[in-house]
Amino acid sequence: MNSNLLGLILGMAVVTYFPRFIPMLVLSNRQIPKKLAKWMSFIPVSIFAALVFSDVFFWNSEVNVNPIENVKLLPTVLVFYIAYKTQSLLWSMVFGIIGISFMIWFF
Image 1 (cartoon, helix red, strand yellow):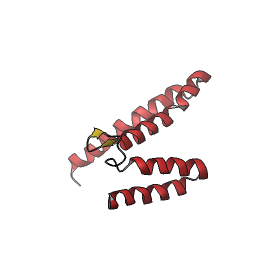
Image 2 (tube, one colour):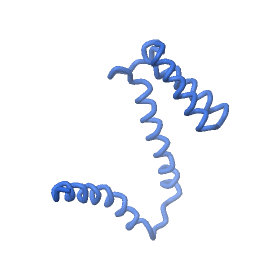
Image 3 (cartoon, rainbow, N blue to C red):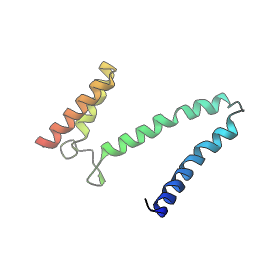
Image 4 (spheres, helix red, strand yellow):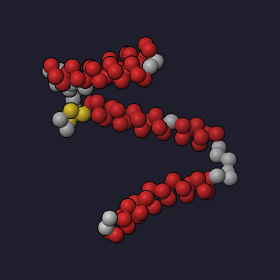
């Protein structure tokens, strides 16, 4: 392994580790206010929703809500329905994969 490559990998490790470590170090002995903790609890859900919806509604580098052109819309509705009815991640994934495969192969 090249020493430049090793230095690059170590540098990336440090750069990704410190933004996680410093807040833990600073906040480990402090009580976080309940309002801040509640606000922070919505961050993962918000990020996940932004990732999912940006992927679903963008087709061919533009916003497309036409279910005939955008093959991701109908499987998304199916997945939401299955997830709501079954409360099962497994069945949601199975029907999502089947739905998107069907739409890509046949449309």
